[in-house]
Image 1 (tube, helix red, strand yellow):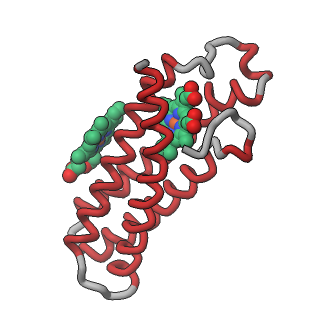
Image 2 (cartoon, rainbow, N blue to C red):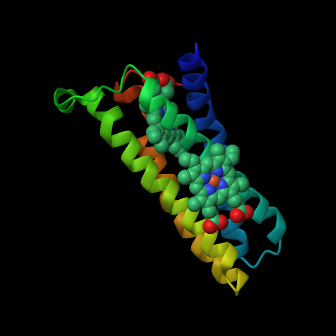
Image 3 (tube, rainbow, N blue to C red):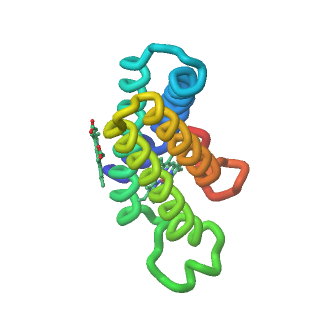
Length: 147
Ligand code: HEM
Ligand code: HEM
């Protein structure tokens, strides 16, 4: 029951995350490189992205210990699906989430706001690309669905 709720939330939240990422990357690009002045909207989008990514981290961490696809055994390494959920998905996603948190934090602390937005743009972009390549898209045959 709990597993089902969390699994569906985790799966559905990916789409929310992709949408807020596209919005915040577009906004960051506009303030960082195109002289647009919509700072407060971009800051809010950056924060919404950070919160969504942290929420995904919490749900993912719980799933990690209750999912039937995560089996703590050395033989899991020989199976590409079990290895994906035991090692690949969690490690790349955690790296991506750390990059996003650092990018947010550097931007918040920056004295020059434009320089802060530039850094945040690059950290968010790399984090976003890592997330996209680490999602178990159905065409990768990892037993996951589109939604
Ligand atoms: C394992 C779980 C989590 C970890 C390790 C974590 C880690 C962090 C870290 C290190 C920061 C500091 C960023 C900074 O320097 O400003 C932060 C900020 C934040 N996180 Fe999380 N977080 C987690 C879960 C969550 C959850 C579940 C939410 C909400 C749904 C959340 C919302 C936020 C918010 C709102 C901020 C502050 C943004 C600000 O400074 O304005 N986090 N988190
Ligand atoms: C932004 C980050 C993340 C995204 C976008 C994401 C996305 C996804 C998606 C789309 C699935 C497939 C769900 C399905 O259709 O069955 C999945 C499965 C899973 N994720 Fe994540 N994930 C993220 C981060 C994490 C993290 C940090 C962890 C662990 C700490 C984690 C643990 C898991 C586990 C254990 C499963 C397998 C669940 C199952 O099917 O039993 N995820 N993730």
